[in-house]
Image 1 (cartoon, helix red, strand yellow):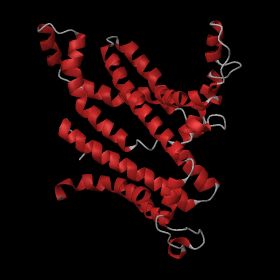
Image 2 (image 1 turned 30 degrees about the horizontal axis):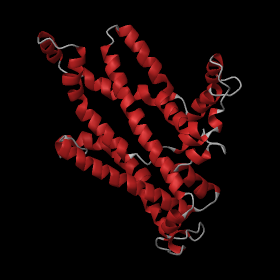
Image 3 (image 1 turned 45 degrees about the vertical axis):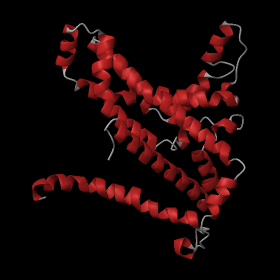
Image 4 (image 1 turned 30 degrees about the vertical axis):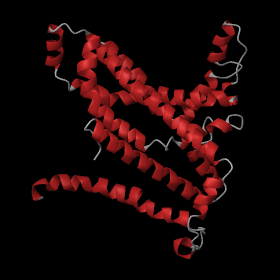
Amino acid sequence: MWKYRTLYLISIPGIVYFLVFKYVPLLGSVIAFQNYNLFAGFGGSPWVGFEHFERMFSHYDFLRILKNTLLLGAYDILFAFTAPIVLALLLNEVRLTLYKKLIQTIVYAPHFLSWVIISGIFVGMLSPSSGIANVILGWFGIDPIYFLGEDSYIRAILVGSGLWRDVGWGTIIYLAALTGINPELYEASEIDGAGRWKQTLKITLPALLPVITVLFLLKIGDFMDYGFERVFVFQNPLNIQNSEILDTYIYKAGLKQLQYSYATAIGLFKSVVGLILLVMANSLSRKATGESLY
């Protein structure tokens, strides 16, 4: 232990951060089982057992909100998780270094924009009067569409905006993993007559599989945590039927209506479901591929 004292010393700020900001707040989850009163505190608030959970499941809109959360999470895994892998493979094939770095810079840049700015860009692009999307539709004789005012488009807009923002950033780890593949494997395969497509299937993808598995498991852990800000900036009364998710509902119930215990119960439910999914996916991955988080 003394041999690694420097490493232990360096790790102390990180441990303190997680204890103070990640583990201590977990104690606040206890108010999900109370009728929490701000002035009475944890000790003085009455215990109500699972009353808030029962209220959550019996809420007339709960199934719709849960469905929206699950669908957006599934779309995000289907498109936003796979897109960085494809982009990293394509970038790996670019041989001109300057051109490759230029593309990387362009696709990384949106990640540093806030959701408020991104929503402003998309609102402008999708505007029914002056948006580029409707201008293009006009060339084909199609009437302007108010995309953000219709339920049927909001999920595609949410997933598409997230894809545009994070697809470049998501390629960083995959590109780093690609640089670790032994070039002699490609040289040997070329001698055997393998083309780029077969090299990708037989060498590149198998080499990336451990990284893909770990990132997929981490993504599964966040399956229910789609993000409040990402949805809230696009939400309006016309698209709320398909855009209301647990995160935005927690904000409205907890902060706008001051139902702290009820909002905490919903947040606790979301966390428990995410934990169960992560444990199940981790177990399946360990059996199927031998790769797992723990």
